[in-house]
Length: 428
Image 1 (cartoon, helix red, strand yellow):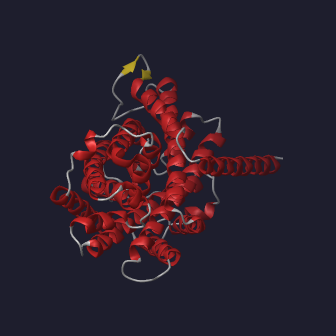
Image 2 (spheres, rainbow, N blue to C red):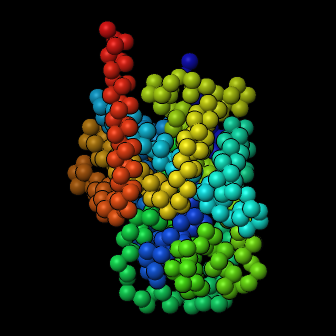
Image 3 (spheres, rainbow, N blue to C red):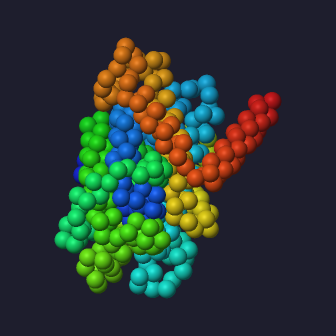
C-alpha cells in the first residue's frame, strides 16, 4: 500500500505557513549580523535577496504544480535525472541538513530573546523549542496550521511596531541617500536566508487542497508581503541604531524599538519568541515531509515512512528532523548557522532550476498548471537568470561556510558510495 498524506491545507493556510516561516527565519534572527555587513545599505541587500528568491520562486511554482507530492527538491531531481539516483538523494540530503540548520539557527535566536525574561541557557531554550515543535508536528498538521496562523499574526504585528517606531523617531528615507557599501552582496548572501520559507510550501504540496491553483499564489504572495516588510524594517532599524551596535546584539529588533520607545524592548522580545517558534515549527514540519518522501522511495530506511494511525502524520520522520536540528545547536553562532542554511538552500535552488530546464527539454508534454513565463523555444529564461543570481550569492560567503559545505558534500558522497556498495552486494 502506498502511504499517502491527507490534503488539509487551504489557500489562506498555505500563505500563512509561507509568510510565517519567512518572517520568523529572517528579521528576528539575522538582521543584526546583516546590518554589520551592509551598514546603511541593508535595505538594498534585502531587495537583492528578494529578486533571487522571486526568480527561483517561479521555478518552484511550476515544479510543485507539475509534481504536487511531498519531497519537493528531491522529487524534482529524481524525475529530471531518473538514471542518476545519487543526484536526487544528494539534493534531498542537502535539504535535510539545511532544514536542520535553519531550525537550529532560529531556535538559537529564540533562546536569545528568551533571555529578556529568564536566565535559561540559550542552548536549553533552543532544545526545548525544537522538542515542542516536533510534538506539535506529530500531533497534527491542521492543529499546527492554526498555531501557525496565530503566531504569524503576532510576528507581523511586531514588524509593524518596529516600522512605526522608525517613522516616529527616525528618518526612514535617510538610508536611501547613502551609496551602496562593499558589504551589500555578502549581506545579501546572508539575508537570502530570510526568504527561505516559500520553498517549504513545496514540501506540503501533497497536503494542499487544489495545489495547481493555490501553491503558486502562496509562493508569490508570501515573497511580496515579506519583501515589503523587510525593506521597511531594514530602513527603520538602521535609522534608529548604529549598524555595528545592531551586529553585536542578540535581540536586534528589541534594541531598535527600545531606542524609540524605551520600555518596549520586552514587548518586542515577547513577539520575537512567537516569531522564531513559528519558523522552527514550520521548518520541522517541512523537513519531516521530505524525509518521509525519501523513505517512501527507499532512499532512507523504511521506518521513516511510519505514520500515526489516527493523525496520519509522519512521526518517525519528525523525530529524525528533531535529532538533526539538535545536533546543529552546539555551533551556537546565529550568523554561521544562517549562512550554512543559506548555502545549502542556494545549492538546492540551483539544482531545482537545472531540473526545470532539463524537464522542459525531456518532458515537454508533462502537464504544467503553472508555467514559468518567457522562453526561447523550449529554453525558459527566468530559471537561467535565477542560476546567475544564485552563483553571485554563492561567491559571497565566509570561508568557514565553504569548509562546512565541502564537509557536507564529502559526507554525502560517502553515504552515496556506501549505499551503492550495499545495493550491489544485495543484487549479487
